[in-house]
Length: 235
Ligand SMILES: Nc1ncnc2c1ncn2[C@@H]1O[C@H](COP(=O)(O)OP(=O)(O)O)[C@@H](O)[C@H]1O
Ligand SMILES: [Mg+2]
Image (tube, rainbow, N blue to C red; front, side, top):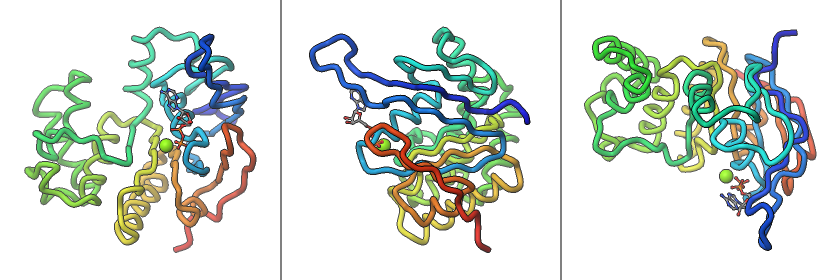
């Protein structure tokens, strides 16, 4: 078997450690994800899904436990190494899109490429083809305020793909969208999974969408309580 893209053992996350208000949120998470899997994480609000996602995304460090991201030990990495790993390995998609309001769709998609030091012409070309991929080529000059929720999320997904990271982390990406729009965003994730071999971790409140993924992980009060095989996509 190949190196897991995510390998977590005994992950504990405590906020306000050592203080009177110390709060242990994750109580020992074991999670192994292989390259090319599409995994969903479900659980009630406050169960620790976003906390876990922040750890997986190397945006935060665990209090205890070991975490290897594509074979690299994240627990022992410096902040600089963490941001380097993040930029190369992970594309993030959020419920509220997190687009830059004053920049148009094209510039939003170009931004990670700018940070990565990609020259302007190549940036523009790559962003254009990504906007095509997500069906947003006609809206390249629109700013986020001039786009619908579903369109904003497509642009955000194009941005997440900019540096060709193998892993997409999506925290409630359809949480702010209506049913039909959620469907089309979910279809886009399926396409990226199937056609580009992306590994996808999807946090969702929607059990029907979760059931379409390869594997459904349920989090209750900071513990993985259940793991089921999803049905995959029914076409
Ligand atoms: N930065 C933080 N500092 C302190 N407590 C936090 C922080 N982030 C989340 N929490 C707490 O952790 C718990 C889990 O939150 P979260 O991971 O956002 O859950 P979910 O995404 O499942 O709704 C909540 O009780 C929340 O208040
Ligand atoms: Mg959350």
